[in-house]
Length: 202
Image 1: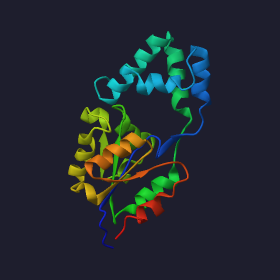
Image 2: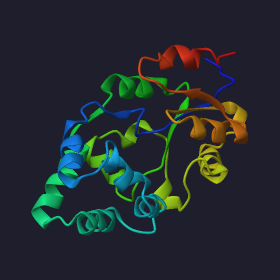
Image 3: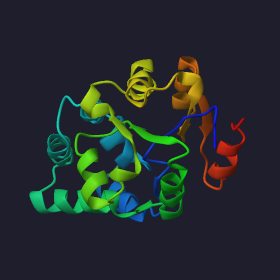
Image 4: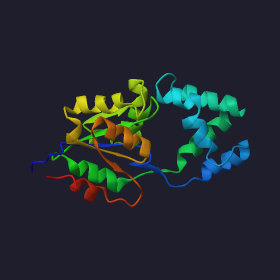
């Protein structure tokens, strides 16, 4: 099968891995006096969270800062960290779909993530082998929607922008991909990605 599209590029968090149960994070927000979604704000969107996603500090250094900021003991911090991730669920059907895209397409991952993501993909979820290319913000020192992150993935795939589709759950990352010349699919739960990808076939 010959395709004008040669590669399908996925985001990870919010697309392949999605938070299904927020109760653990909400309990900690109440305990710590944080507003709703304050846990995500602290871990992902704080200055230190962004430093971690840029690879300037490690995942462990980020969580040590969280513990110090919130006044947590080592045991409480370990529990907060476990509860923070406990509600995240890997979409097994999507992973199977991604594996099934090959050999018709190359597959890739671009993620704004901490320095341990490659290990998580390899050892915790055992899905690193589903991708020909994995581009992680902490390893590159830049985050989506910086055009350079998309360009790095394209270079490693050996694709031109118009030969690839990018899938992400955040509109600003979609806009960043489109600005580079990528086709894009804005992911929302319930979207039939297989059908959306088919729309781009010759």
